[in-house]
Image (cartoon, rainbow, N blue to C red; front, side, top):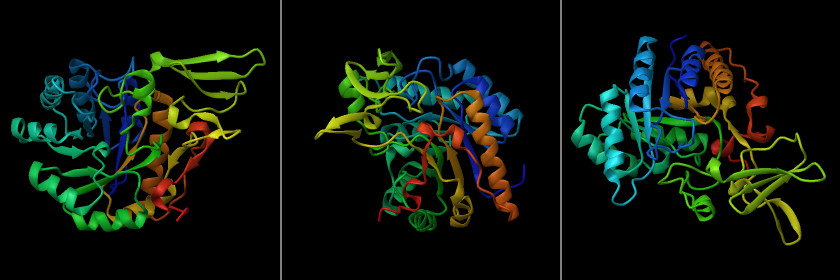
Length: 331
């Protein structure tokens, strides 16, 4: 790989996806434990403490870094599970933990002072004052910025908080809520993305083929979408459901659309952003290999002065993409 000022941080929900990310050119891989301490708490995903130690060893052998996401908020009276996750991450030899909760930041700093701390996007820190406070109080060294900032705002904020590093999302799922602070899923399913780590838990999702051939998607007891068989459709979440309101059927909150900020790679390098993040720990090995490989080539080309926007249409949710707030064309 070409040396780059922009690190490529990539998802892995399974050992196979981790290997794919490393092989495709990730500088760092982020994972989570198989419990409610991380925000992708789906059956069949994530790592046991033993598996995480093996993952760290394989990643380090390849000369890459591994970050562990412990980015949900502890439930009252159950803090021990989150503390144990931080302990397990430190024992595994993680290069950093990605935390959102202030109490967990304080615990990690006091218990494992040499453990590098990254602030999760779930913390939604988007001002110099907030980031400086977190860096000075807890020793946070990198902040994953919320997906609500323009490229100009990212540039200004990155300069203002240095030497604290900034990391931004560049590809993958979007959330209409304030960085996952959502009550919709918990209202219907009883499980909160913020404390249980799961939005639209798989056990609550149902697909039903209708007599006419259409497919109906339900979450719990709520029908949230209906589309022709074979039509592109995203994972069924309430915020991306289609509903009838005022005699009109449509996406009430947000369309199922992927974030794709690949064309902003040169601008993000110029902005001084330290890391570019791919979303998708719930996705398979093929997705990880394709997206990571394309972004690796795009970053290396941009550094070399020959940038070409990668074609990732086949990996986009619902077959559509947006640059989100980076260019904020609706202003």
